[in-house]
Image 1: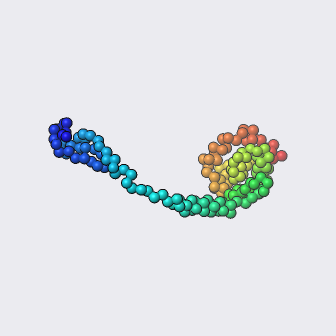
Image 2: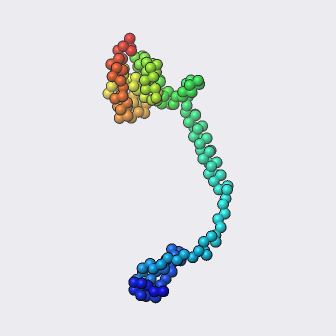
Image 3: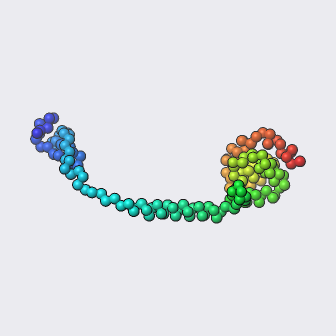
Length: 170
């Protein structure tokens, strides 16, 4: 056998890739596979290999559940509502102003922003009651709410609710 390009008889067989290569010009001439080497090594399957990893993940999940349950304060066992530490702080801020508390109760009764967290609803109550600028920034800092995020939520407030606070407070 010789190279069809340079007519050299100096050929090398690459056993890893199964190619016959010309040593002088480097062109691949043919592919040959040695099938006698396939299947000589046996793999031993260890069925207990992943057991320890699975146990570790189960233990981690249990640990995270217990930690998260420690920080929850159940408000109502029937509805299984829970209040986080931020929510508890937010509810304590409602005691500052009776107007804000009335607005918060109105939001709760009518289900406005019921899908949001308690701290967001409390901040919205302060916003509707007329708190702006420094007072509002201070409240948002205490409740750990981003100002840009809160601004997005205030755009979603219904216009009737923005101007209805005088009727709510009477």
